[in-house]
Structures are given as C-alpha cells and as structure tokens.
Image 1 (cartoon, rainbow, N blue to C red):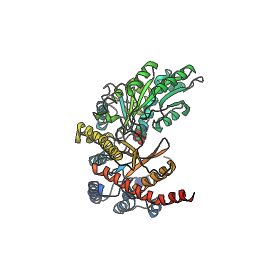
Image 2 (image 1 turned 90 degrees about the vertical axis):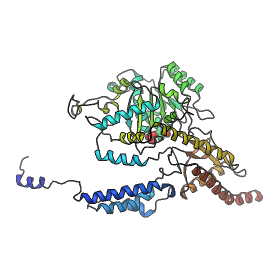
Image 3 (image 1 turned 45 degrees about the horizontal axis):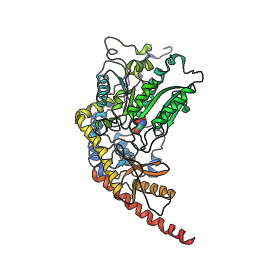
Image 4 (image 1 turned 135 degrees about the horizontal axis):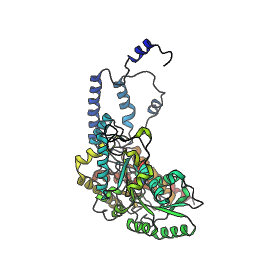
Length: 507
Ligand SMILES: *Cc1c(COP(=O)(O)O)cnc(C)c1O
C-alpha cells in the first residue's frame, strides 16, 4: 500500500483483536449455567402457561437502538431471561396445537450446540459434516421407502423444499434449456394442478418461478377435503384443448387445514397418462407413512417424481430443517449445477470429497442442520419415531371422540392424520354468532395459557383447529382442552343469551 506507515501498521496488526473471550472460565461457567437452566426448563415445561402476552415494556426494551459499547455476558443472559425466554411462542409445550409446529427434543438442543461449535459451512469440501448430511438424506429416503438412487437436499423447511422440487419439475418438463433461454412460451401457459386446500407456498413458488399465479389450477375438494379427481382430469383436458402446457400435479400428503390426504394412486395414474411431473407436498404428513394406519394411503409417495417434507414438524427436531427428494437425480442436478472458479473441486485436499451440495439447490452457505437429525434418530431409533407419529394420530382420533361425546361440541371435518377441527355450538346462536363465540373461546384458551390451538374457516364456519405434531402431549392434555373449551363456551353463552332472549322478547 502506498504511503503506509510500516511502524504504525505493525502496531495496529499487533493488537490481535478477536471475538473470543479473554476470560474463558467465565464463558464456561455461563455455559454450564445455561445448560442447567435449559434442562430445568424443558423438564418442567408442562407446568408453565402455554403462552402469555408480551408486556409493553418488553416490546420497548426490544426496540432499543444498536449498542455501541460492550456489555457483560452475564448481564446479556439476564436480559434474555427477563425479556425473551418467558415470552415463548409455546410450541415446545405439551398443549401447543396451533398450525403445524414441532416441539424439538433436549438432545436436539445439544446437537445444535455441537453443530454451532463446529460451525461448518456444509456445501463444499472434504469434512465430516458433508458426509453426515449425505447420510441423513439417505435415511430420509429410507424413512419414506423412496428409491436409493434418488437425489435429495436438506433445506430450511417445507417451503424451500417445495420450491426446489418445483424448479426441477419446471425445468425438466419444459424440455428446453430454460436456464439459458428463460421462460418464453409463445402464449402457452405452463399449468400446475393442486387442490384448493394446498398450502400457500405452492402458489408462492409458482409465482417466484415466473409462471404466474394464474397458472395454478386450484381444483375443488370433496367432503373429506381431498382433491376432486374428475374435475382435475376435466381441467387438464380443457387446458390441453386451449393449447396450454400442463406440467405438474401437486398432491397433498396432509393438508394444513384438515390433514386430508389426496388420493395418491389416482394422481399418479393421471400424471402417467398425461406425462406430468408428480410432486407430493408432504411437509406435514409424509412421515405419517411410518404409522401403519397411513402406510397404504401414503404409499404413492414412493412413486412420486419428487417429495417435500419437514423434519422440524413430525420428526420433532429443532427448527429449521426440511427435505426435498427427487427421483431423477440428473434432472435435479441440471436444474442447479454451476461451478464458478472459486468453487472448483479437487481430487485431494480440503476441496476434495463429495460433490458440492450447491449443485442441488440454490443456497450456497448451509448450516450443519443434519447433526440434530443424525443424533436424534440414533438416540431413539426409527421404530420409536413411528410409534410417536402413530401416538399423535391416535391422540387426534381420541380428541375427535371426546368432541363427538360432548353435545355442546361438533366436528367440522373428518379427523385425518393428527388434525381435529371442532367448534362449540348452541341452538339459539346464528352462524355468525357461533363464529364470534368460537373465536372468543380460542383466544381465551390462548390468553389464559391453557392451550394453544389455532383457527381456520371451513365452509365459512370458524373452527378451533388442533394439530398434534407434539412429542410432549399426553392424553390428559386433550381432556383438559375439552374441559376448558366447554367451560369457556358455557360462560360465554351465559353472557350472550340474556341479550338474545331480550332481542326475541322485544319483537
Ligand atoms: C408447514 C407446511 C408447509 C411449509 O413448510 P415450512 O417448513 O413452514 O416452510 C408446506 N406445506 C404443508 C402441507 C405444510 O404443513
């Protein structure tokens, strides 16, 4: 460098700044304290309220400007304990039933600590994490009985897994060099078919892939919320007649609303008939294939061109990890492979080893998310996971029965997989009043910290929606949920009824 003062440079470089602690023993002690606190917390999580609202002072604490000065690590940990830790979302709690959210496990927590310690960037290079990553992808194939020659990649979750698979589907089905030439289609639309109950990430993926949201043909569902196959075939025929180019059917292996499973075999046959790509969104339900009750309904996954599923849901590992498997590994590779000069691979040395995973997905930097899966499956063995998933499905069936046994409650959809949609009913209340009543019941269940179901609308009816992908839920948690629903429901009806009676007598 021109004009560099050598002596000054030597002094500056000689400071040897680092972010490692000067006092390792303090860091070690804090680490021990954290592990103790974490294990206490997890061991007794069921005694905590599922959720509590965040006080205003916490929100204002969490909107302070970026700190310029250093702070003691103990003090930072105290801040965490005071302002962050207590206001958890609650999905690790035995009575968390909202959306489709996993619980994690204690060993999963420790695995993430180890993964963060090694902190490998799991993309290129000769290092053990890449082999663990590959081994876990192979285990994923084995869990679903998917062909061993298939390719696969661990991603942040189901949304990334779906868009990754649909990218391959689009490129493969278009049969031109889409990576070079882009998407020009001379007016023909590339169309994708799925049920109206399909997860919104499919729509988003199609939009991002440049096909336009209009390209998603949302086929209606039957009374079990499964895709109407006749309408599907008619829509494909109509599109072909119009000169469009159907390219893909997405089957849901467990919809988010009701846990419905599309008829996999029929979808597969239609794909074969029209030479379409068959993709399964199994983000929620694919692993239910391990439950003997669902093995046959989900067998079609084995023949699918691609399947996306989450391990942070039904494998109970900590966030985030999902997986895409693609039957045609070459199609997968040709959608993503690219080798710039700075990512050359060698036969020996650090840049030797397995092919870069970056050739199978968009993300370059990737964390060591495979380790928590690797350790967890070793800890319990696959049979235990099958039993856990089966238990969640049986818990849903039991909850459905509790609903049917209570005259004040009604099921709003058939129980499928581990989802139960129900509501409180009263003959004096209109549809709109029932919607308001059940919204109030749900919010009170959450605000009182009793349980956290979520909601959905099924044919305009507001449902209290319970989804159990929870390794901590017990039978008594379900009984408590029903008792509390009945209790809050009757209190609310008692508040409403005088008004309604008054309304009737005033006429
Ligand atoms: C959760 C879910 C997704 C999205 O997966 P993320 O892991 O949240 O990105 C997609 N489809 C279905 C059916 C899901 O349940």
